[in-house]
Length: 461
Image (cartoon, rainbow, N blue to C red; front, side, top):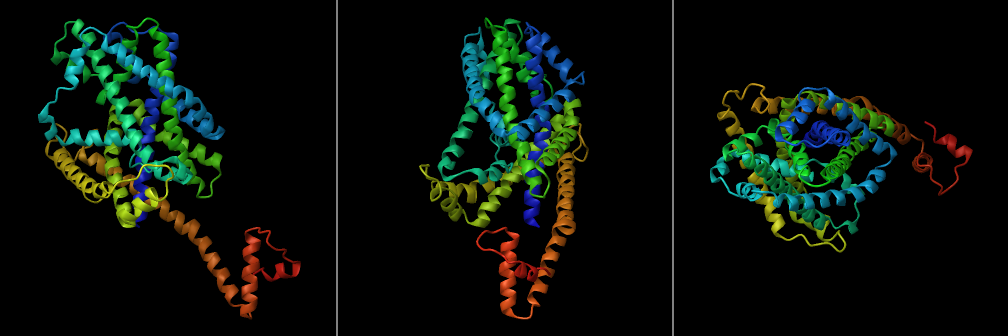
């Protein structure tokens, strides 16, 4: 039962995250097409209006959400290697654009004020549980940690992949790009608004007004930044093109995981692809039509990644931490870094303690500091909203699992047992062994021997 709950939580987290992730991916496609046909905005007010007219006051997000999940489904149908080949070229272009844009942003007037503000700590914020929860869940979402994605795709990995190297370099690279994007965004915002004679307090307010949870930050400020560069419209188009394909590759990985698991239930691949895509689209429609709903999904399922990660820790602990380190890494990988003993101490003590403290702290903080929205209500970031969605989704998936076992898998197992009973009731042990041997070869289509018509008749029950 515990295994069922554990796997169910992995599916819940990744599936729900994929539903609203597809919506944001659709935004990337929209702004790619928009700036192919329109000039870049000149002011913050103009850029903000473009985003709000699209995300808040139109039905376009639903259409582009549909296009995003459709592109992912088509990529799976055609083979994921097609998107991999495209990303081989576009991801370096994307990283090159980020680096160039970052350097350019530092040349803007008063950009240093934005960098200074970003790296000036407010030590009082460290006492807020939400700060820590947002940080760890965002990092888990960025790297795919705790979603079960890499655990499933590990079946395709070989000893030559260098698991420890990838496990170290991918988060480092992700955090480097995230920090770079944050620096160039703050440099752009402060440069633009200080030249408009805004105060620091007014700029902070503007940063909080880019949609719920700053959902529009990239789509509002990056076009403004590229407008300060000669030929910036071309760079903006390249940026959103590369961003769209990079996001699509992640979406393809998510959908392929669901398709692969549904295939294991005996469903044809094309049926599984269509079915999973339709369900993801339907669940994501709420996020497409209402940004507060998207904020709620990000809050609920982003935090659920911490619980999912805790279950991964328990899985390693159950297997044996030292045995896991040796079997899965140090004695398996070829030409890879060795996982140090320190990793065992982190898994045994540091990470579980961190998870427990965050879970208790977050629950207490959410309930005690509910403000105008009581914790037992269903506001976008309420405690009750998390509980209902987690347990509701879990009940649905566990029920589906139990029905599958009871009404599909179990009857097949009963038939197999009945066959075995009939087999054991044969006249002689010799006949039984002979029939078992012939039946094994017959069912597996083995070519090790030839079965005569006479013997074939003996295998029928």
